[in-house]
Length: 86
Image (cartoon, rainbow, N blue to C red; front, side, top):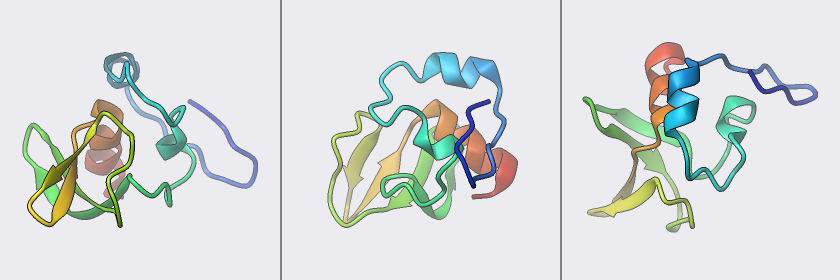
């Protein structure tokens, strides 16, 4: 579990964190629900990822363009959405 002052830290399975080997944001999604490339826009694509809100493509290797939007296939972010519905 990661902590940030004045924020509620989310708890996810250590296996998800270990699978997230390319996180350029130092796991901000665990403490900052407004992280720009991690805000879910619509339901999960089962077993793969989720659509996310973003104005432009970020340098995150887990964020990929899909039509007019983006998909996040980060293992940690996926579990946060499944576990906390956010």
